[in-house]
Figure 1 (tube, rainbow, N blue to C red):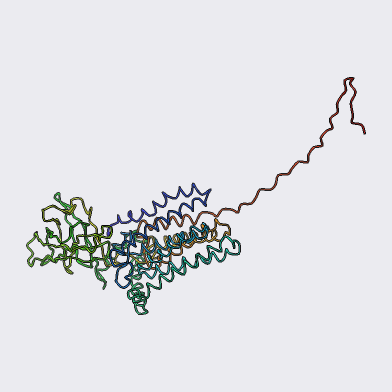
Figure 2 (cartoon, rainbow, N blue to C red):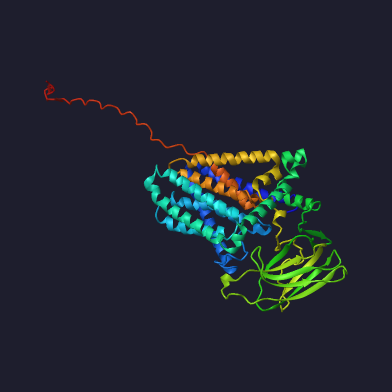
Amino acid sequence: MHTPYNALRLAKGVFWALLLWPFFAVGSRDRAAAFDRFALGMVLGLAAAILAVLWERLIFPGLHDYSTEYRAVGLFSDVHTGGAFLEGYLVAAAPFLLIMLFWRARWFWWPLAGVLFLLTAYAVAVTFARAGYAGLLVVVMVVLASALWRLGAQPRALAGGALAAVIVGAGGIYMLTHVAQDRFMSERTERGQVESDWQTRMEHWGYAVDPVMQGLRSAVFGLGVGQFPRVYFWDSMTDERSTPAVHSLTEGGGSARLNLFPGGDQRFMQAVSLYPSTEYEVRVVGESLGEHWRLQVAVCELWVLYPWRCVTRNLRAEADDGRQLLEATLVTREPLTRFSFSERPTKLIVRNTSSSHGMILDAVSLQDPSGRELLANGDFSSGLDRWFFTSDDHLAWHIKNMGLQVLFEQGVIGLLLWAALVALALWGALRQGIDPRPQGWAGVMVLAALLSFLTVGMFDSLLDAPRMGTLFFLLIFLALLAPEPPQSSPPPRPQRSPRPRRRRRDRTADGFVRGGGE
């Protein structure tokens, strides 16, 4: 992520949205069907995200443990460097679920939509993200306000759905407040903690804006898409900020080497399948760039961010003798459950614990008692395939504000164009939403989704994940669809007056006309 090629990774979000957009444009003649298909896809994606969160909570802290510092990440591996991508998706998809109570005003939709929304509120609650809570409240307020505004035009069609939405919305708010009252979230919402976090965020935003305003060219055009981690790393060496940990891969002589530099808490890991209560041999070949080794290897139960029940060994060599082989034995723990569906995923983690010097790794090996190698690409001959990393220094990777992110990457011109695009999209969604016909619910869906997405985006850089970029621009494109004109019945065609029927006259056999006289 510290190279210019990070721009290509982030650009995928825009490109995917542009590739998918023609399918909506073709179906714009029947916009209700197009919105219906999009809403169905969002609801199915929401259900999958909820199931992933429920599974993650079940096998790690537990469904009802709100005191442990464990924030769900679900299916969003992009959070390996931090980010509010899960809660951003949840609050953007929630409006499409609530609209089912109105647009699909049939009684059998209400229990399903109600249960899914309560589970959505639970999934947002266990992210313990204050911006996610605010985004879900925005969804509830926008949808309920629209329902109340429409009750005068469609009282019978909306009365049941409005009542169900009020009940479901109240249940969702209760879910948020119930979780917020527990220890972990109550500490995050204390006034002192909120003020401290706000001060930290303001300082971080200042660090993000300063490099942009150092020159006319950067102020007008920005410093480039995806370049914030690289700029932050180099600038942190000249000020009071701690230098974040980075890594690089060097190739030469037919082999590759992984460089682990000192700094923040960065973990390199690979998923492995291990037996319980078994000894495994770990071997690391490499060299230290300082006086001695300080490398940590561990086998942990881990999904993405939070290691559990780790077996850790510290590999140290007091003298720097160049390239060395260090070995350690790891004994795995007993599983907590006998059910396969609830087994925690296991990963081998390698971490540089030195704060002053880096290390170069030539190979990492993990072998079972029979000598069978369990790691793939342990010599890094295929680059970093099968390896993954996480970082706890989230501010080094994200600006934590969508508007400032656009300013940093694309300058003042890009920010003005982006703001104009968002304003047009919100206006287009509002124009669709005030349509009293049932089709107007499509505009309400998009309006609530955009507003909740932007609410979370005020405190996080949601566009740092390509999938979230795709979702954002699809919502923008949907909002820019012109509202359908009201369907008016065609004027009646003028009817011709019936022509008078001529009276038939019969002739007799001798040629005289019979009848017809007055």
